[in-house]
Image 1 (cartoon, one colour):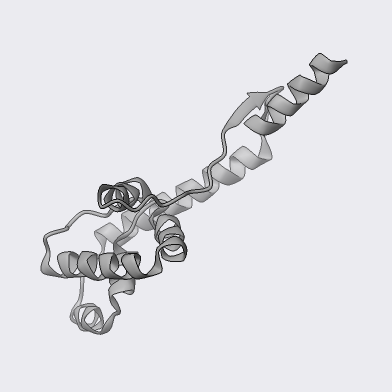
Image 2 (image 1 turned 60 degrees about the vertical axis):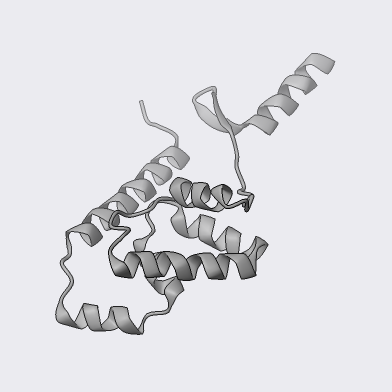
Length: 135
């Protein structure tokens, strides 16, 4: 029994991202990398520190709250460079940071439901159910 091709693509994408995260955690900084760290912008420092969906949350925050996000990124970069933050931050944790200081960053979300062996969005499912009820 073969699975949905979209599901396979999502699994492959997630696996690749997990492997990148693992490889970036295993790397030890060399002298050249520590020199690069000094010349990086605060945003680059934070982006290198973000994990799963972190960049997506950051980009949404930058478009919705550009001034506030810039100052938050600068503060996060200082914390990262000082060593106070030592673990990667995923999108959910970054979103929690923004919300804890009062910025309601909106994210595009979809809810998928399995129907007949395929995943369909909740809106499609509801519209097809309504069409079936009307008939």
